[in-house]
Amino acid sequence: MDSVVKDFEQCYRAVSAKDGRFDGWFVTAVTSTGIYCRPSCPAVTPKRANVRFLPTAAAAQRAGFRACKRCRPDASPGSPEWNVRADVVGRAVRLIADGSIDRDGVSGLARRLGFSERHLHRQLVAELGAGPLALARAQRAHTARLLIETTELPFTEVAFAAGFPSVRQFNETVRDVFATTPTELRRRSAHRNGDPATGALTLRLRHRPPFDGAGLLAFLGMRAVPGVEVVEGSTYRRVLALPHGPGLVALTPHAEHVECTLRLRDMRDLAAAVQRCRRLLDLDADPLAVVAALGDDPLIGALVRANPGLRVPGAVDGAELAVRAVLGQQVSVGGARTLAGRLAAAYGEPLAETLPTCLDDTQLTHAFPTAAAIAAIDPEQLPMPRARGRALVGLCAALADAEMALDPGADREETRAQLVALPGIGPWTAEYVAMRALGDPDAFPASDLGIRHAFARLDQPHDARAVAAIAERWRPWRAYAALHLWATLTPTEGGTR
Picture 1 (spheres, rainbow, N blue to C red):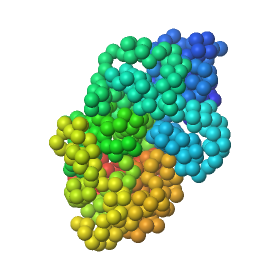
Picture 2 (cartoon, rainbow, N blue to C red):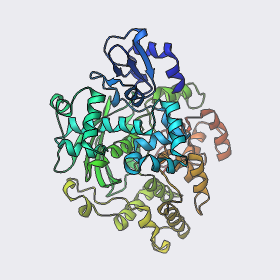
Picture 3 (tube, one colour):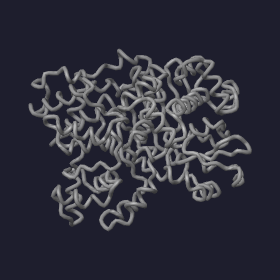
Picture 4 (cartoon, one colour):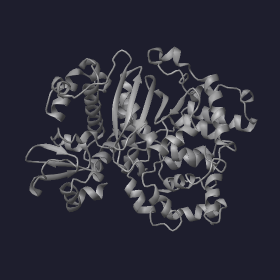
């Protein structure tokens, strides 16, 4: 949010009011104390002359400021700007949050984005006040603190799990960022919920209120793939496919946070697991911005005002979501769920072979099949119409061969074009994948049967062309408009997958 950071008066008013709506949009660096805070920090408001407003925690750390021990600014929800922005900076930020630099280095990140390292560094510094390494360092520091404060893992394991190349760099970063040692951080922590034997730990994932957690669970529960995910009561559980092996997660929404319990085969996957869960639940969204844009609309304004905390469910794995979208073409939600469950049981890797120490939930039995596993299937053997089977295998072959990527760094428009160029993949599937797998807040499947039913109930023209024309005024939040429309439907009217 570059314009907000440049607007000193707006930022200072937010800090003076302790306004939590701005947490994650910028940080407050106080020159007289050498610390940086989130806007809602409960400490006494600093004098104007002693304040600098910076766009990211990484920029503050790069400038030599330490994180406030009271408000813990590194733990703020992420900036919702990255949900909206589709340029190279937005794509880079999303990939860095997913751990791309820890896995592939800056050179790998630059290649993934199609730019030189120098150009990428220049772009990030100009926009965020910090280059890719500084942004990755800030994330490593946050991950390290999570592990220090919530587990009993030895500090050597914490260092490498957080992505640091050495224990020395881990110690130096913790001292620089938090003005204390790892030992002191652990000593001060109120409680620890970690279990090193199984790689389990419980975290609190922050979000901006209001937050419709019940609506999210209802959406995910209707589509839960047997053996892969399940919703029981107020908790959603599922298997995660992570860079270094499988994991399990349990997510329980609360008014101020989501309780997240993770069991990982490899603790190096912690940052990626947390970010993927945040994307699944749309935790970095700014609901008030959506309400401000859509709340006065003559068609859907009343729906938006009635449920201002609605979020757009994302995905923990883009390839999985795309497969499920193809399975859902021209069948009911229940039918798509059944097909996905059969596919997982037949071609997914059993957890008993990959995550035996974490099996305390007999309902979770398989990882969802990889794109490579599905690409190797004879389409004639799939329990679906032949044309759809060929479309599914063709999609997975493109993903397995890296001809296309469905991750946070994907170019959204280019990916849409790649999807519809594949046989059997149409605009509906491309928009649904953009909405949930790519996290595009402006994706809108105008031809969706459920959306057209909702338009008809609102006494509006409901052919796909008319729906698309009306939805133009909802940019850049058309995905949220789609969710509000879907929420009005009965189970027999829904056309969503």
